[in-house]
Length: 591
Image 1: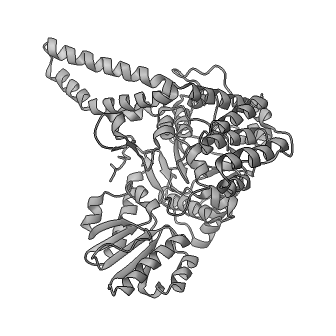
Image 2 (image 1 turned 90 degrees about the horizontal axis):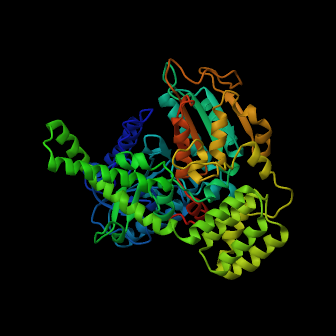
Image 3 (image 1 turned 90 degrees about the vertical axis):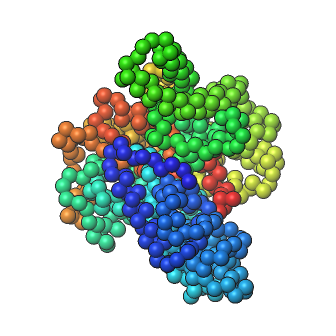
């Protein structure tokens, strides 16, 4: 299992949060005595590695660990514990395994823990399959998962599909419950701001839960000062753009999954794949991850030259013990240095390609909101070259969103002629779901993107990647709309200062204040952003996913001298444009 993030420098006690999830898991495991088999939903095994080490599982009787699949149980353990998400497809698989045991007269005890909560619909499936009576049921809530000192995630990749396509709001209830659980631990968050219909719904559910369940919060000053809820539907452009921070590019080309990246032997020069954790435990990565990739190579060269000079000094001069100690400490960082040089070198094989630069130019043209004819031609050329469908769709979505839809002739042409005929009619349901999710649509009115671009300064022409002054460095000139909204939310005037712009964006806008020991919520004048000299902590919640480049932009904001806030992120999923679109194709097992 992966190395757990240290979490020692988190602005709130995330170690305690993780410990609580560990104890809840231990309680579930100890509910069965003796040796046991732990069967995991494949989509939960990765997140679980960020909560517990495998040694803890063994200490509590887990002899074997397997993924839930269509195959029979392959273990002689008589105790079986399932931990799964409440999906009907998974219930069919569990029922099939239990039925197989019965046919083969295999006596076992079964426990099924739903994550994060029990589902009546799922239990009815088990009843219909005739296995419900032989199962002990429970709930396990390991969310939110701390990925790093300032990043929490529910790792719920199907939020877009469930909300926009299936009309299923369950994920919003799970998120509301998560935020209320954070408030029960860290205090009632006094200032709440939100943008988007899903954001409004989450806050309404939070209030309803508080009224019905009498939320208990600790005494004293709350540790989190402001809650900002952002619906991903408000900004569908940013996740489609190519991330240009180091961490963002690693995710784009190597796919960061559950805080780790799996590297092929060709990258590191070994003979087998290596899984590398990417979090603050790697100090060099912590220094590099939020930088524009264009400056990373130079920094690595400087560090390597410094290390080489130190080595020369040790060999040729008499060093004090303190100097030798510093040198040895630097040598400990050599494996990290070598690893990131190898990764950076691999990434440059992509970033130096003419096709990559052409794509960046086209993305920039799209966010500029001009010369759409050129963009249509470029996308058509990509289709003719049979470039990956998702890669084509990312640009097509930017075009659709910034232009308030595709013109009818282009919409029909790309939908029926280009996409389906070129990539196969098996993608028809996928394309339909993109439409239902608002990612692709037919133009019915004039776009307001140019007004938003000017009013929110979404395109910054004088970006200096090596010495950035604006969040636009994360996308080399495009300021992510989502983070610009956070930036304005933390200004003294809040979103009231950009009220005209907020009205042009989809969904509700609200700013409210929560008052402890009172059921009702009302507007009040906000408190100062800092209390007793400390930097106020802001929890930014992304409903529908957030990219690593957006997180980097938030960290950049927080680091500015004029900023009086620390920021921590809670998201339903860490994503990039590819995984965001693929979530509309994903099956429950993620196979």
